[in-house]
Length: 342
Image 1 (cartoon, helix red, strand yellow):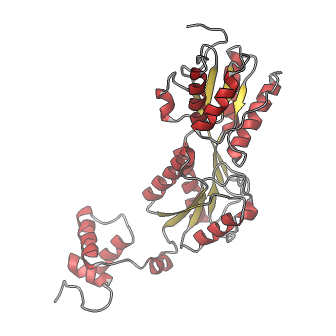
Image 2 (cartoon, rainbow, N blue to C red):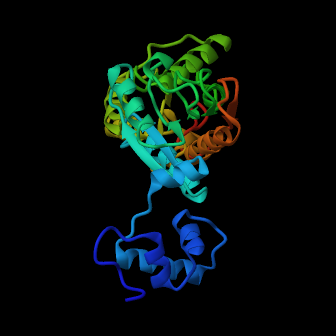
Image 3 (tube, helix red, strand yellow):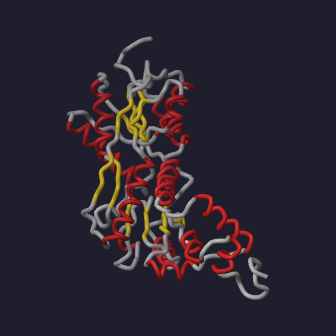
């Protein structure tokens, strides 16, 4: 009977069109995600697809239009706040452009795991790859076809592939100069993990900023991005009455450090000024509110998608294509002039 699913074989696009009461061409446009279909018609076609159990042949569509309409995403530890927010930016931008996203996580980028993950993504019918975080892995760890559009963010891959990265050095300099400008004669530092390129940049810029100001560079304390590691560093720093200013490599460690200072009787900012990095929303609601360097994680993701799609249209670009995203020092209540009392 017309409008009913045929008794044998998978449903065809023609079956969908008949059930929805539209032309096969219209059903095809809906199947391919085209924008030039009226909402009511699109809804009718989608209901027909769902009723019949129709699944578009993505491979055949890709051959016709030269695109899979999918972007691969490779990251290290998506449970980390920055990676999660950057990935969210990738997903939002890809969705807006009508692209699906395939995600692969690699715990140890500087190993064969990275190469295997990249190869796995390359064989999942994607048009390009966004590398959200790859630690200190180099291009030798990312074995991809030379024609594959790739975009990267803050990592050792910057310079080898088109990139969208935060002005981390500018942000760190602003934080250190702020603390020195308040009269602090030393600025201590809680670092991110050794395997993070972002952490290494922040540590190196902190040290360089102090040397340029003629200030001694104290030994940094190791952290791992977690609030717990900031708390442990804070317990150690609280024992030294000469510590009056601390720059933490991210907000979560800064919040852990503030708690440790409070527990050891060191008031923030009366006794110790603290600056974080990232500009997470929760910093505004800590006590005291956290002075921090804000970066736009979601913009990193959106810019990477734009770089990938630009290459899909025009061909691969080299690593000289770089987008530097500004950072901003946000002044709140966790910093104060040296010696200032409530």
